[in-house]
Image (tube, rainbow, N blue to C red; front, side, top):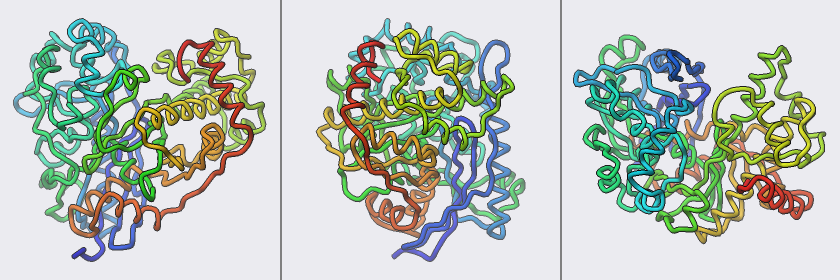
Length: 497
């Protein structure tokens, strides 16, 4: 029988900010409140781009203290999710060997070459089902091979698991995030020892695998003292890849849906029971990441709102700050599909002058260059909508799983123009929300493990659907215009949008 309402803290770490959310959950009720948000500012030092992991951990502690102030010092649980692929190295005493390297650091190019020399990508994909991204954990480890730091490491700990370790003193490798390393066999849910052997990757460096819902320890006494919480407070493994948690909270009814988890990245795809690892899937660069309750997140990474975020940073640095709401209103009035780019182009991965790079990409492919911030913003959003269209069309074709609706969750659900353009491009209704899907999925996995809710993944989604505000966008205009724009972009850029 479900218990009475309980209260859980979701630690949700994003590429630009972290947050601690307080979830109050009971049978038929789900209330989420943000209690603390803190910046996530990468730091370049010595020619390397790092995550400021100690600052992030302090933000987590501050957030847990804020959560305790809301609840009289009591929590029924804590869960941690965050971005994928990056890791910290611990020595034999458990001490951190330097700040984790940021996945946007260019060091991985050498790692890609080393891995491809050992295992052709066709074989790597057949073994792991993970799309080629130059910053996958496997490539990062290959780039670090032979360095004194990796040589001194006793453990490789993915970022959300590192935060959980500092909270509890217990090590583990949560499976949904582990599946992004390019070292997991998605059919078995275990390590791919063939890939590890051929690439010289020491799997003993990874702590034991654990699954969403597994216990991950209890808050340490010093953590309780620093946060003012009354123990014991259990920590539960959730879908520690933030996309896994976000997809768990997609408010879908039935299985005929596609999703786009939006934020810095757009993760666009569908949910399956088994991976798709054939040649066509590899050629289309789709990935098979593992989700909550044994599901497979079959998706393609699209560059996402990073493009617009970097534009806003560049304009501010240039003394031309833009207010986002006004910018989007002006962008909506601009000519549609005037200027578009391939949103999957690796040229857009690194930080820097994004407006200039977007203009250069337009010029190379024969599109008019954006002339002002509003036209640049419209270029970004039209390009993302095209990329969403292509990813979801191919996901349905390759998986054989048709979609009747597209669910947009994450921060991009607040961007009405992006949601409407996605509906127009895909020719399908878009249901936008919840914006804090990762935190909701995090809380729901904790709540089910604690017994305050029960049922299947579909039951958890029904709770989201009946308790959270959602907005529906119907497709409008001529779908043929989007198909033509996609074809032209494909022809001019040499790649799918």
